[in-house]
Image 1 (cartoon, protein in one colour):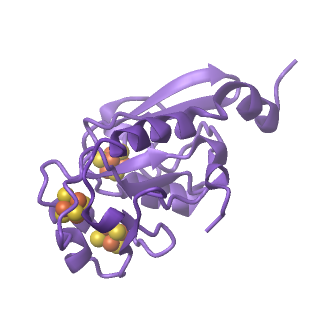
Image 2 (cartoon, protein in one colour; image 1 turned 180 degrees about the vertical axis):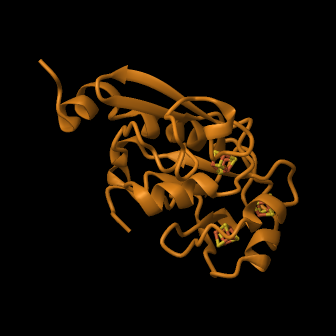
Image 3 (cartoon, helix red, strand yellow; image 1 turned 120 degrees about the horizontal axis):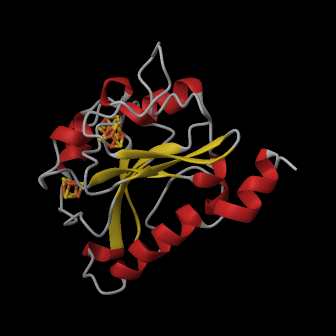
Length: 186
Ligand code: SF4
Ligand code: SF4
Ligand code: SF4
């Protein structure tokens, strides 16, 4: 019997995003943090202007796309993965929105596809985030990855951000992504 989306998520991927972030949070326990606060992005303010990819003092940027699997529709026609108006839905490089090929598309079962961010390839440009927000559920979101960020006193991206989306957050609540796993929808 074909699963509906709710069954699918509950049985397969419910903890995927949470697990990855728990791993990152574990790193924080061993990291010295300035005043016990860290820089983070408010996803409700970010307009995906592109400066997260270019203004960070770390290369490539410490800002990465995270995938909040709980919010994802596992769509075949994914606005975060595919360029607008593609003729064929395939994994060909010419069809992919991501400039670095950092999103892996995997067939799960009819009609679901999973999209995984390969963090090492992501430069934090936000193109997929914009595409997902425009045509999908907004499950792709930009966040400062705290295993990469050096926690500058004055974050260079915060200084350049046109949306005032950066702020310092408590080190024990280091992420501000929107989604079910936060238990506090923003
Ligand atoms: S600089 Fe600000 S608005 Fe631009 S992508 Fe980064 S957080 Fe979003
Ligand atoms: S489109 Fe940009 S933000 Fe999204 S995965 Fe690719 S490099 Fe990262
Ligand atoms: S605090 Fe520094 S390393 Fe971290 S995101 Fe900002 S500029 Fe990049």
